[in-house]
Image 1: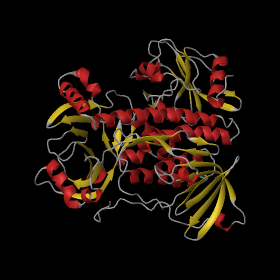
Image 2: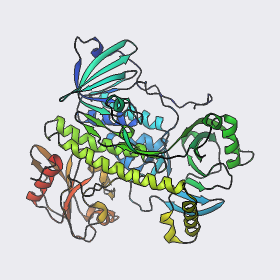
Image 3: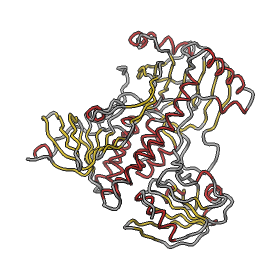
Image 4: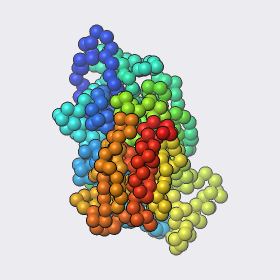
Length: 542
């Protein structure tokens, strides 16, 4: 619920009549994206930057509805940097690495999400989702001016989707009436209630948690640091748990756990929301209500993310509880995974079967997120007296004993997914190599002479060599690979060696376009590298 004194909204792509509406027959497009939230816009941007024509359809005009997602993780910023829009996000966002956990009126412990140096981006920024979307769309506008074939169509509501073997036919409603188009590929990014999923008779599988949470975004000059604070059974009695985050523009996000059997209309009355806030903040603290809402937890996903020529991403494919910041962040990893694969398929350089690896890898990521989110929710909202006793015993031990702290779960925060054991991975032939850079893992950043390692990775296949010889370029089945050669001279801080060499004197890494490790060796072997590249692009053994 918006409050009249403040609305964060941007009209990013107002309705304009398109040439397709005057065509005699439905126009065929290579890719149509359904949904103009952050995942849809990021998908259009990824494909458009590859030179692939893409049309995005949204039933609104880019108008933000409250702050919604606010925590954007380091991996999301790294992906956004590759798209060219991380800088304004970082400038506007509230940077934080430190979190604190309380029980009643006692601090149980604190944690640092990024305890090591040598990363360009912080563990998290807090940024209202409409700003995140705005910066993505502004980057789209820059890309359009540079020739990227991206079209954003506001107030174009898809009313029907007919899936065929080689395309999808779409009926669309606009202020000027209906029209139809066709898409070689349709990407569903239309949110948790996904109309596209409904049109196709598809649904989620998973669990709905019987608890309710009240969100209140408030503007205040609060005497709280820029940290994540979480209370179990807070002394101010405003709910069974409470979460506090700072956002830009002097806005603070507060989440109150308020139980299952509630009167939603009554709880959303301003006087009742203020009663909870006043008890938490104390007397004399002035604040302004900005946005309020009540939500319930759901940890669910589609059985399959790919259905022939239709592919689902983000909340339309999977849902998790907001504790852990896994929604938008996992959606951005979906885009990161799908973009290069669909690009190779459209270019005729890879078989359509490569897209099945998107389903395998991102379903793996969704299952990991659901597992962590479910565990967090079970810890935050114990359902039996015994589980409540156990939870509080863990909190009591964690206050004094280090071993108990990993058991406390106030929402394990989003980290990049590692695709262990999945078909695109090649060999791990680096004895003594660090586990964090094994095949399937997202490349950790590291400072090197002139910048950061991730500046040199992504967008195409890279052969990263450390103290090893290799050719500057290599091509396998029409797919090129460039070399990034580094030695100790570029690694003044020694962090590159720590993260990529471990105990090995030299290393060769095959890095995917999404900055995930495909394979690694202790030296260059052309036959092995070609075979790993072939596998990473085709799902087939060379």
